[in-house]
Length: 393
Image (cartoon, rainbow, N blue to C red; front, side, top):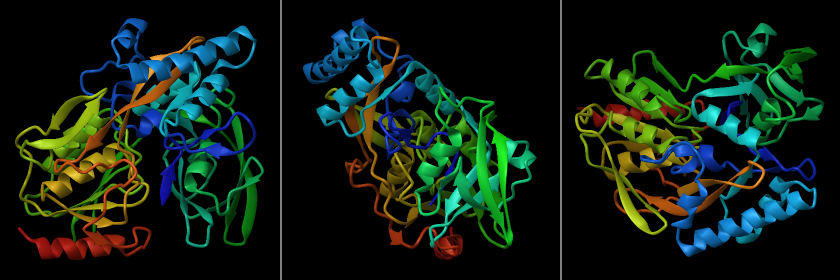
């Protein structure tokens, strides 16, 4: 499983050094930060909230009350609101400070603060550099793909989930902004050294296209940030008509559902992509007509395939458009709605769930591949090539 130091990281718990996997709006396939069609990017106003059903209104009022009382007592409103969300049992509910929420929205627009490297965990638990972004602080420091990452700011990272390592690399949104220093303990062969780099504002490169030697084209999508759907469509339109495609969604943390629907339109000739409910109201998402429905397609997924990426995978599988290869996906299929709290922080509470075209729920179950293979195996793409060769045209 691999990760990039952009926005698919866990947030630091403010009480202690533990980490909590609260992915919230970046992972949400829905209303979070405007990811639902027809919503704007701003948290709800009080007037908008007044029309919500009682259950969500009650939960929001409880969270807002906790934040207001904490402010009155001179305590942290964010911490108090987080405790209220936790007590509510909302698995995906989250609270963000004003700065954290602004950075989250930047991430959905394809901007982030980081050092410009991707990490992967090997089978023995070692953390290695998977990729270094050209022109980034990591590249300027001479860090290379394949270097072993031993420590970050003195903390050993061997054996940790990649998401935790990514979180430390990015740093706290408010205390460790662009320009802040981070010390990396590295190893290359017999050489071990410490490199201090400074975080910078970077842009994501969420879609890459490459053709395997004598084989299919791999379209790798790492997240569904703004504009990604059109990038996928452009990539597909530019390929020879007989080229098979491996749509690599491994480690894709989700993002804007509208972008996932646009990406689905590259492979479907209209029709249903997903249904969802918000506060009990049933709605549907449809692909645009005119997609390429003929060329062989394999979707490669793993346990890091989440949210909007699961929505896309489920649509291609249910519609018989792709063979899904890999391991069971993460299982994030709920919808969050943001609303402003006292002090300027933002709470995102769960308001509904998504279903695939056949009516399958994703939340808590994920997508089961048609053919299970180890997605971390270096031969995974070769296995995808073999499946494609059997599909033909």
